[in-house]
Length: 217
Length: 219
Image: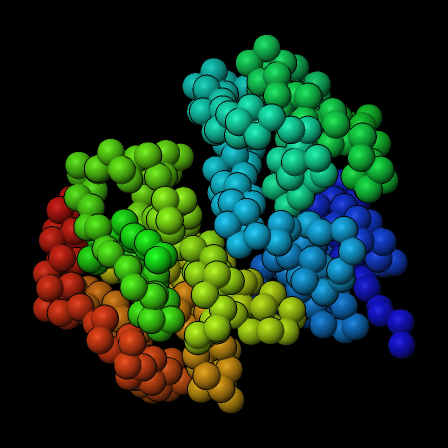
């Protein structure tokens, strides 16, 4: 019996992109069920009653919520290209960095966007980004996952693509190339991966979105 | 011979989780108690990003973040007392709820105890709503992980161990048996697990510790 895989989401969401990247990496056929976030479907509310958010993966009728939990689930169920390392310590490191990105980097970056690049806010985001820059420096490889992308690269999707669009929309600079050469290079490599590229929304649409959402009042 | 060190404080619920997991798996370890007002150079070396406890150091390599550490322990010492279930969907559910616990339930519960006046009233409503969800999870289940205890019970173990001291400090009863019969039964079951029972700190000391924090928080 074929697997039924549905992904509830919107094409412009970086969290949905994390999941589509993992699905494509494993070559899984899925159906994207596009949600109207201002009018959430009964199905979405049924499948994610706690947070009522996207993405939600529904695999043979069973829902899984929270993007990084979903990505680990995908890695657990479908063999093939690994998303997480095999070694327990390497796995722990990957989970640590993915959590760091979610808990520290993303909120700091969102604040820079919300504040229109206010100096102090950007400085705080830079503190967090510096840890990622150092990690790439120490690793000395193309990706956080080494020669291939892994959970950490996937967690940092926003930084690779969405952030640039926000910067352009608002005329701000957060991820400057001279301060963060490694992350800049990483971002370019990451969005060039076929499995990532296919799941990205068009850049001008994204810039338009940020302009509309955060543009000058 | 494996060398396992745990950097922590005796009162942190996040550190406690690791002590429980190490005891459940019979892993010999040394606990290094930190003074958080005066962190050791070792702690800062092993957790340079967050500078927090707990940190597990296994043969000189360090792992940080309590839920990450729990999974590392489970994957490294696989043969005794497995914590996470085998089924991927069950694993995903436990990871989801553990995250919910840490991001929502624990902060609201501790926040409720520490706040005063109107802030406390608001925090109460949020906390009760969260607790109702966990109560629901336990309907038809002995433990959060199912028939026997596991990762999710350890993740929520703070609720079993710290609820009474926190209630005393707040002068309120949050986990009452009429509203939360499943949670109360789970709490007793959890605290009876031998490895948990033996790690139980002195309740009076915990009460004194939390009272001190509440009085010191001003307003």
